[in-house]
Image (cartoon, rainbow over all chains, first blue to last red; front, side, top):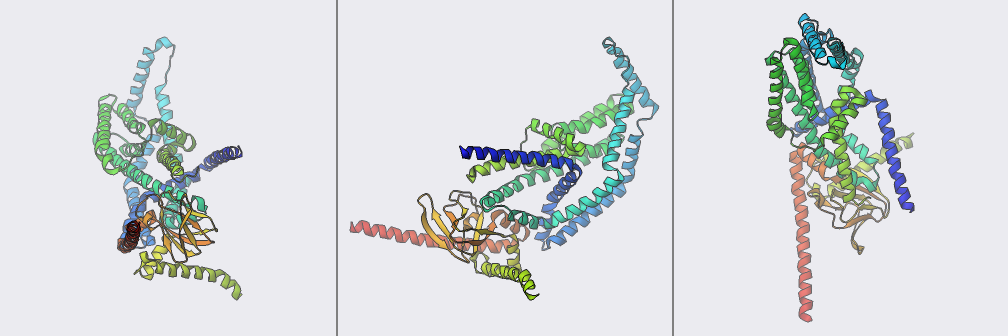
Length: 345
Length: 171
């Protein structure tokens, strides 16, 4: 009886601890975001460091070379992309000012209002709503991505963290393992190895897939002559991390822009078709090659994770929620399996 | 003043020396130079066990090899608690788990307070990825060690068989 009570007390204690940890983390959301992003980048880059080490370099030198290459690529990307990207963002922020757009939205407004007149709605104000939406979207971009203070903090903190996480990950792991009690040592080491094997392949694959899909989207949208193709392409690549909803979310801005820009459905149709073909290529060619391991998450679980991520950490949280949900799933699954194998229950 | 410096540096030097001299005596690391031994030392996990504390249980999945730096470890067969061997400073056990995850064939338990080094399979595989040359050296030595143990087991089985046949003939 005492055993049962103490077991329940332990479970309650662990649950309480998890809940407290969750609330603590949401209170320091910004820092958590930075740590998660840095850890993800360092983790994704780890095989590169291992490859350089296999060529006879020390871990420090390998990390420096990766870092120098990454920074060069980043600087190059900023030089090439900053001007068109900032022009696109400014253009979005200023709203869709061309008269044509206003006329089309006005027409759409009148058309829908006349069709639903029986409901007693006299004014839909699509134009105003769309304007508010685009302004709030670009405000979000400015406040979350291009805000000078957070940009500088992120630009300094993330590379700093990535560097040390990449360089000293082994020592950090060794130090953390030291505090594990002997009784759980084998269990924990086995769990870490299993998770590393499962998640490593999954996360690196997903990252590479998002990168390829992003470039593909930018290229296709540019060929179709869609405005803001860089911004939408980057967003489509990132959104592709979210299964099922991602491709739809990625295509939606391009469809809206196409309708507003041309006033017809022809270009929007081409966008839909292009995204459908790209998704098909992604599912049949890119993913089987780059994503060597899937962790089979249920769509509902992904959806819930995306909602929770969005609630606590905004749009970035929505994107990060997929790998985090994968991490949580593998952690739970392997812990249960290991508890059974090591007869610790 | 001197004693302060001794307190800071002396134990660490001793620990490092003991670990190095222990590693040099392990057949799996035979022929490795100081630099290579240092790489091995970096991936080892040092653990301390109290007397009678379990290191692993018979039936647990194999994780890696253990090397005794100090203390005695008893290897016991479950469930009859039959003592198979008592291992001392510089001995090693569980090396088969470096190659596969099959369940442990016996329980290992500290007989006295022990300082033990653990080489985990996943860390060894990571080292092989990073330094294939060193990895090959270790794997060859590991194959030799396991081969040696297999030879001894064969001899033991042969002796047992001979004894059994002898007693059957006498009977």
